[in-house]
Image 1 (cartoon, rainbow, N blue to C red):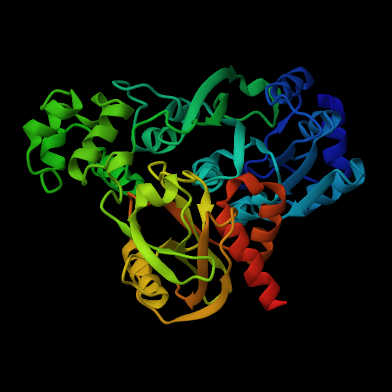
Image 2: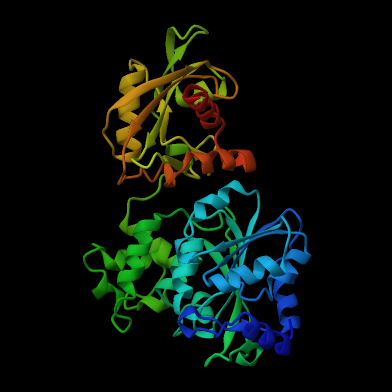
Amino acid sequence: MKLSEMEATLREIRVTPVKTLGQNFLHDQNLARWIVARAELTPDDYVVEVGPGLGALTEFILGSGARVLAIEKDGRLANFLRERFRGDRLEIVHGDALEFDVRRLFAQPRVKFIGNLPYNVSSQLLLNFTAYPSPISLWLCMLQKEMARRLSAEPRTADYGALTLIVQLHYRVEYLRTVPSSVFLPRPEVDSAFVKITTRPPGELPDYDAELFARLVRAGFSQRRKQLQKLLRDEVNDWQAAAQTGGFDPKARAEELSLIQWIALSNFVGSKMPAPGDLHSAELFAVVDVNDAVVGAAPRAEVHANNLVHRAVHILLFNDAGELFLQKRSPLKDRHPCVWDSSAAGHVDAGEDYDVAAARELAEELGVTCSLQRVAKLPASERTGHEFIWLYEGKHNGSFQLARSEIECGGFFPPDVLSGWLRARPHDFAPGFVECWQAYTRRAA
C-alpha cells in the first residue's frame, strides 16, 4: 500500500495513529517485501504477526502461501484486515499480544514470528514470545534501533547488558539493517532497525542452569561501573578461582565477560553438571519376566544395553486449572535427551515397589510431596523401553525444585494444547510419555 493510499485508507476507516499504541505504519513496499523474504516462507509455515496495522507485511506473508495469525490491538484495524484479506489462511485476533498464550503455538508444526513491534512495549513482547522453551523457530522484528543494538550487542560495548545475555543464552541475534524513520506514517522520532533471531542448536553451548545464570547476570549488571567481585561477593566464595576457571580478569566488570564466560561463572557457582556417563552409574534395577514378576537385578547400563524387561513409574501432575506439568529432559540423559516427558518418571530400583518409586521420583526430580493415585498399568513393549509402567496422577500448582542433571526446564500445558502438539510434533516427546498420555486419555474418555 503506497503512502497516498495509506493516508486515504486511514481517513476512510477513521483511524488517527495513536502514539501510546505504537502506531507507525510501514508504507515502503520494497522494504516490506525485503523483510518477508528474510523469513524464507513456504506453505508449511505458520506465521504469527504482531501489530499488522494496515497489512503492509501481511500482504506479502500471505503471498508466500503461509498461514497467518495476526494479533491487532486496535479493533478498527482488525476489522479492516478482515475485509481486506478474506480467506481461510488468515486468522485475526483482536487483542493485546502481551496477553497472548504462546503455548497454543506448540500445536503448529513450524512457527515463525514477524512483527513491527511498538517501541514502548517491544522488550516485554520479545520476552513473552521468546520465553524458553518457545514453539517459534525464527523471529524477524522491527524494533527501535537502540533495542536492536542491545539484543545483538557484543561484550565490551555500551549496549551489552543483562537483556543481551538472557536472550542470547538461547538464541542467536543478528542485526540486519537500520531502517530510517521516513518509511513510516507518522514518522517516529528515532530510527528503527531490523533483527533476526534464531534458536541455538542443541549442544552449541556448555550445559548451564538458566535460573542461576539469569540471577548472576542481573546482579552483575545492577551497577555497571562496579567490579563483579564486589557485586557477586555473596554468590562466589572463591573469586580468584572463579576468574581463573572462566578465563577472565579478576577485576572485570560485567560487560567484559562473554556469554561463554558468564556460563562458566554460573557453573562455578552452582554444582558442576555431571558428565553423561556419571549419571545414575550405580543404580541397580529390578529385572522382571513377561508377567512382571521379579527375577533378579542388574545395573542400569546392563538393563538398557540388553533390553532386559524392567519396571518404571510415570507421574502426571495437574494444577487447579487442569493443566499438565511436563518436563523437558536434560541433554545429559542417556535415552531420549532434550525431549518432553511426564511430570516425573523413573525406574523402580531393586527391592523397591511401584508406589515407593513414584513418591521417590517425585521428590528427587521436582522436590514435591503430594498424594498420588494409580491410573493405569502399561505392559512392557518396545515403545515403553521394555518397561512395565504404572501411571500415577496427582495435583500440584508448583513451585518446583527441578533436578538440573535430569531436567532442563518444565511448564504447565492445557490438555487440548498438548493433544494438538502431539499431533503436530510427535518427535518432541519421549515414546514412553506418548504411551502414558494415550492410556490416560483413553481412561478419561
